[in-house]
Length: 200
Length: 79
Ligand SMILES: [Zn+2]
Image 1 (cartoon, rainbow over the protein chains, first blue to last red):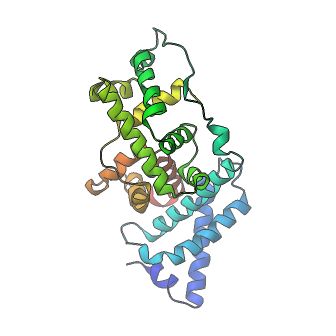
Image 2 (image 1 turned 120 degrees about the vertical axis):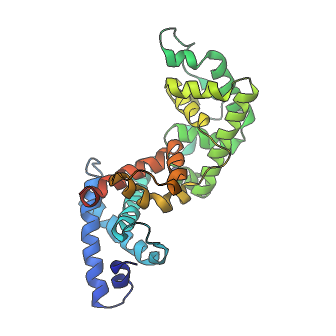
């Protein structure tokens, strides 16, 4: 397996030394990955690394040896940092602020003739999408979909809906499937959808 | 609730890529370190990780995570 696992699971000075070494490596890596984010100052990085080391020790048996141990540990640290960053960025936003109870409304006028992507996204298709979003999705599916469209991360949606991130993912997935099936039922083919994807 | 055209177009892109079966973020996360290593060493995506590739196409969050992981691992796996 890995030398790291050996050292980190042996209680005593060897484990302490390995934790210090791993912590230093993670600090350098987290700092580099988040260098463009102003909120990622050194106290943020220190906190993330402390939390990550605890997570790594607690879940070390889940390391399957498919990657380097340090890659796995770095992945956990980056994930911890991203979650905290997302939480900070969204802490002042409520779901209600983002979603009103009115039906979704189209913001722009009919597509202009010069933009190929706008042509692909025809007025009829836009109307079909709004009909499906407003009348064929469940309230929860619609909430998740609209929050997603506004960029709110799944964990943050889950926190506000008192549900797990996995459940949020499932709601979003079901909403996308309903939209896809609804558009196909409205006469759009899988090829139409592909063409629109390509026109983006 | 207003949806901009840009949002609608992005949504259509995701809808077009929606399959009947998808892996969850959790499953994707379990494989991301391996996936990042494969990307950084230029080995290409092994067959076993194709489902991850598909998930990344419809999941901006896991994609963002992968970008940060690759940046973090950049000292180690590029040489
Ligand atoms: Zn994901």
